[in-house]
Length: 138
Image (cartoon, rainbow, N blue to C red):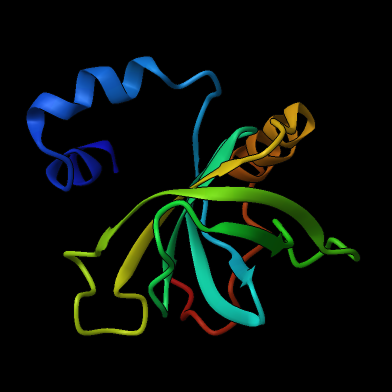
């Protein structure tokens, strides 16, 4: 969580970086497609806010690149959400350097989407769908 995130950023960069945040962040995991140029790249959201998103990606995207982010926060959503933004930072994911999602990409949305805060909050706080039938009962 926060401790893991803090390990990836030099200690002296953390205060000024956190001071710039205008939106609450929510730790969420859902699939994301990044579109830039003619490329589409798979990614997984790691955390999100009304103003941006941190994703783990299968491919590198250059800092400063303009991207379109397409996603559904929940499988029950029927339509994709599509938001444009810019890549602020890219670095290797120390938890998955040789895996499927080796790149962490921080994206700032071109326009904050305040309504997303409520969607993200509801997803974080919603109770589990029910008992998992694949798990043995105690």
